[in-house]
Image 1: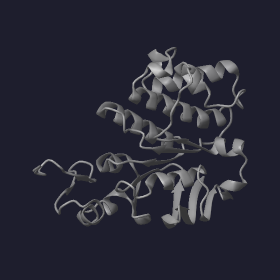
Image 2: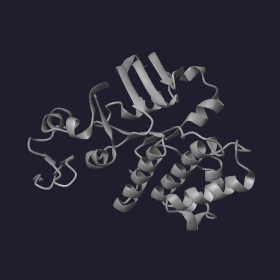
Image 3: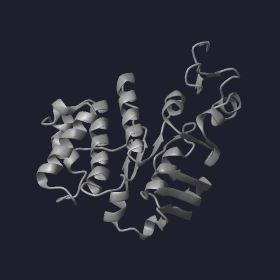
Length: 269
């Protein structure tokens, strides 16, 4: 399965936010979208998900235009966790996660659906809170609860039949997490890719992006500035031209061979 954008642009209020972007995301890989604030990263992810229609160009999922897929079919093939989701209604965590699948979920009995919701809550580290009101949780806990919900959407869609889960699209999924939970969330993304699903996530932390992703896409001033394996993309030149960092900030990790940003010798005035 693949998700591709062909010459996709998006305009708002007479201004072009994204300029003729062409990308291809593959199942089985984790792709991290990085770039400065306001570069167009979240807009690119929303276009990839179908939440935003492109002003021009085409978004294709498994060779079919997103606009041609029924809402049910699209929901089975991709799920998106936004960074600005707000939940005001009062549900337990278990109820929230179970909502990720259709009722009745294809290929799942009611009991199997409940068991999958419990398993996913365990995966995101919230199993003991299954009966708790979602609004009683911290921001980071709610973020992980919604991650379990979108995983439910994809895994329930393929329950009981062969085939990998669809594309998991995550917008800043670790923004409210402590370091241990950041690792947990990104490890879940890697696990989804290992099961044959595709993962595209927006991250601000370059070190986490390089550590977890197979491919990096750099968005700068509304255009695709660079894309490729982390070791080819994150260079001193890119750190300087895109992120405004001084030379010598990018190092190579001795064990992994991957690049990383070293901020510790930055002097604060």
